[in-house]
Length: 128
Image (tube, rainbow, N blue to C red; front, top):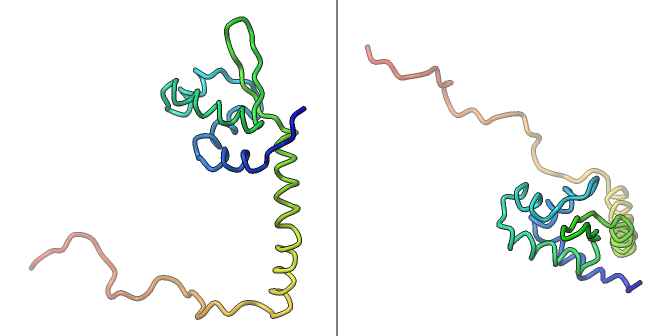
């Protein structure tokens, strides 16, 4: 099995349409035509997005005759999460500890609701 390229996976996930596609193939296989329809893409555009997800190792393809079906590769997403946890885990823990040591951050005056902008709008203006 080829090594996992976390950088390629992050690049693939940078596009919201590819994230949408990944969500659609999370629980069940989908054909490229179904994904194109569900994502409101042309079939060639959907194919390009699927190619990027496939090359990043985030989806697998099952051939059934001349049809292709895509499904998420949960093992690769777990590897990506582990990579991100390794990078961010201790940094976020240190930040949390630092924020906890200094107490609640001063965010300015408390929000007391909408600002008073004058009389309430009571509907269409009427003239006497």
